[in-house]
Image (cartoon, rainbow, N blue to C red; front, side, top):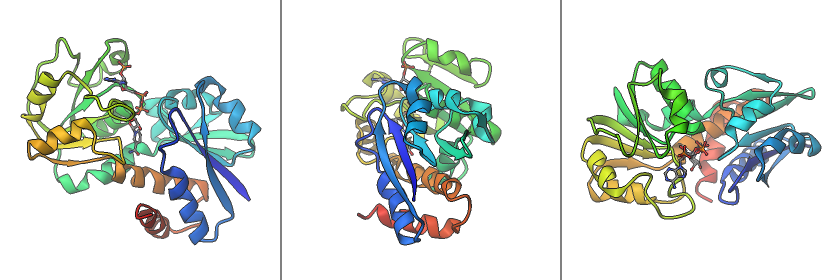
Length: 263
Ligand code: NDP
């Protein structure tokens, strides 16, 4: 029996155990998926190995520590330095990032997106910004603090803090901050957010399982919006495919995971 886990802080809210266990159970794959509340990200490798895990997902705020914990990082995760999936390959930890493709899957229904504002500058913002840039989508960044913007400065069209931000027109505004996850707060000051939402066609939040204050504001302005549930599904399907080493069909994984959202 293989054991998988999700590491995070907080982690109690995570739907990943339900999603992955639903696949393992319904497709008769001998594995179990649990959650680990990890306060200190630098302990990730040690805890992963002590639990003899076959693989893991990593959520807020440890995705950059997860990159450092790996022996090798493959694919898109290498560009961004952010890992959300780790596979134990004969004792070597191999890192991947499935968040960005999960998000692209989620926003397909918004059609042609050319111009995006990302609020937040953490791991998820890095992954999404890199994927958007790969697809020649123009990226603007807004973050609470200056320090986290460093990474983006020579990559995106504009990146600013709340004090210096100048609002433009966007096709899509995405909240990648954890504001709204635990507490009901906005990802930036309300007058600025009001102005931003008046200048966008679509809104998305990476947070799932609740209508955050950010999404409620979008809803009150009749803007088409979505929470992070489809992103969660998209990244989960791709992570599970790695967990089972491609021995299950992607369509079967997706269908089991989708059903787990009804539980
Ligand atoms: P990080 O910890 O790497 O980054 C957090 C970001 O949020 C930073 O930019 C930080 O700003 C900002 N922030 C934190 N608190 C506040 C606040 N009170 N007000 C304004 N900004 C704030 O987190 P991740 O990128 O890993 O995750 C971010 C969110 O995305 C989480 O809620 C996570 O659950 C969600 N997520 C959902 C996924 C899904 O599948 N649906 C997948 C991945 C993530 P600063 O730089 O100033 O500290």
